[in-house]
Amino acid sequence: MNVKLYVWQRATAAIMVPLVIIHIAVIFYVSRRGLTAADILSRTHGSVLWAAYYGLFVAAASIHAGIGVRNVLIEWSPFRERSIETFAVLFGQFLLWTGAWTVYVLVLA
Amino acid sequence: MPGELSVSLWRGGDQGRYQTYRVPRRESQTVLDVVTFVQRHLDPTLTYRFACRVGVCGSCAMTVNGRPRWTCRTHVAKVAADDRLTIGPLENLRIIKDLATDMQPFFEKWQQAKGAFEPSKTRADAIEQIRPDEPARRLADAAIECINCGVCYAACDTVRWNQNYFGPAALTRAWTLVNDRRDAGNAARLQAVAGAGGCHSCHSHQSCQELCPQALNPTAAIAGLKRRTVAAYLKGDIAP
Image (tube, rainbow over all chains, first blue to last red; front, side, top):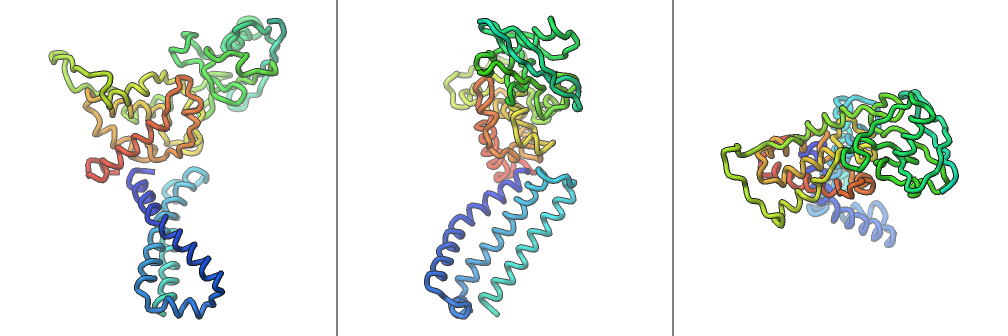
């Protein structure tokens, strides 16, 4: 891993620390209150705050996981580095677009 | 101290096997003494490497009961409580024969990490005065006693998993020079250790620190390089 990837991975990790804590707190809140999907959507729909929160979370997680998967595969798989990098970019994009779609459904659809 | 040791030594190359010998137990006996006894009295074809026998040259490191150690300063009493020794070549390096490994990649990586001192003055200049208590000099001194035995390299999981990784010894040497203000090669050095195979591949498992026979702390040196290269990258002084 070079310094550029290192900085991006550490920076996205730092961003995600508070986001993960809030995310877990929300999960507890939702499950303890027994909220339904309709209840949740009624709260998130049209909310700029939730869009920004989960949009940032998805972007950070996609970058962080893409770099992490690249490092794991370089160390533990027999594949060539060029192939692994291509896969890692595609994996990160998959997370980004599926995550972005989820945020869209949660807030705008 | 009467008795015998049961000593299993690696014989052959990559496809070799362990062979067991009986070696007399002696007082203050080192692992290198044991290997030398086998070669001089039991099997003269045994191949191993040593030079100084007093922990200075760094050439006698082997895997002793599963851990890389400098054999000349490792007492049998410390590592063979049940009078059994299993001695193999260092891991993460190609076996040449028996207990001797090819150290070429180890030293090539040392050079790739820019481990050679780059002078900033000529012999016509006055000798630079450096106080031993300067903060940077303290950091340089902390790792300067490396003897390049390869124990940290053999102990490193990241070296095992990533063939391109420079390893703890090369990066510790780079950190020593980064803190030596007489050195003029730090731009190229930081660039080298910030790339693929450099300091950012380290997982901080700390096996190097645990097993270094000189009690150095390569993990701390590598952490220092991480901080220094990140600062240089963010300032635009280096590019990956």
